[in-house]
Amino acid sequence: MSKDESPPMKVNIQIECTPVEARQFFGLPNVEPMQAAVLEQSQKKMLAGIDRVSPEGIMSTWFSLMPQGAQQMQKLFTDMVAQGLGRPKE
Image (cartoon, rainbow, N blue to C red; front, side, top):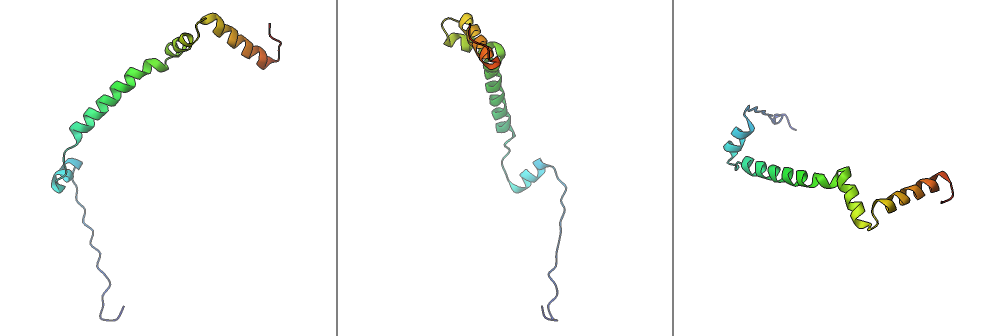
């Protein structure tokens, strides 16, 4: 920088406004209705699927996969526990 040049000038402008006012100032579209609709759909899907991950829902899914049902499931768990404890199968 030579003696004739002055340092660059910095200017800071602070504007206090709400997000709605800023969006309107810049001409951006209002997406709040779309966001609300997407959120509502997401909530519906989550609530509809919550029954599948409940303990009752999981057990009913498991039992439907096994035609012998609860007795075979009980034997499976008993065998796994016995194997984990190092006991021979009955």
